[in-house]
Length: 99
Image (cartoon, helix red, strand yellow):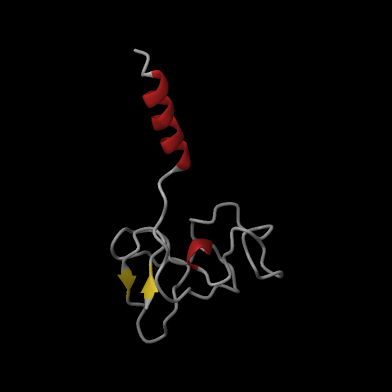
């Protein structure tokens, strides 16, 4: 089972089970050949990748031309809310909104 990193919906990659550089998610149109969909993506690593030979792109959500890309299989963890938005909401609740 392949799952889009952006919308968390299941994707059918066909018989080849690969995502091309220009392929988009049929549900949300997010790029499929992106670091966030790769099996080697690991945000704890220096450049966000466990592949030492990979040339890290600047934007992990956009399509890239990495030759080491392999689509990650399995379910994805639930995406957390934006921490910045949570912090701003907490501040507004604490101090009130200035108009």
